[in-house]
Image (cartoon, rainbow, N blue to C red; front, top):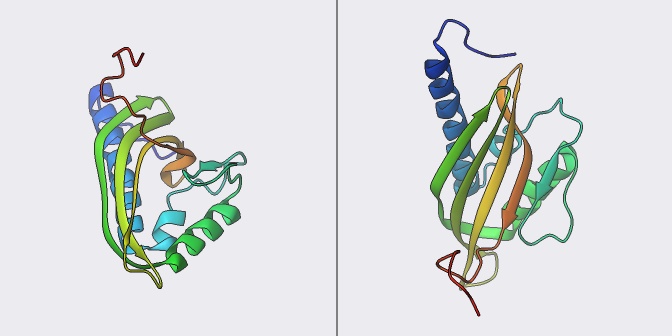
Length: 155
């Protein structure tokens, strides 16, 4: 495992948080530039039970080849990406596993269209420490709910 051993536990956790934050930034940049190779490189090639739940999909993608095909399909659909932003990032380290939660805003123009396509979502990543460092093993997008205050009574 790629784990720093000459650090204090607090320094090691800080190092891991920085590594996860960098991976989320690489994800953001991968979608902003439609860099399929960058996006595919975030995934753990040795993990057998990968899960990718895209906002627009009814069922998950469960293998690296399917995930790469999804990225290629998405990249072919857009003429230009105007914006991909990530906000509200939260990272947790659990030994050799980690999670990240964030929101994203994506704005792009489909080929052959003029109006921008806008997508806002909440995202949960699950990471595993591998020989190559931290890699994604689970990714889940969901639509934001209608309530601004999750503790408010909607009825």
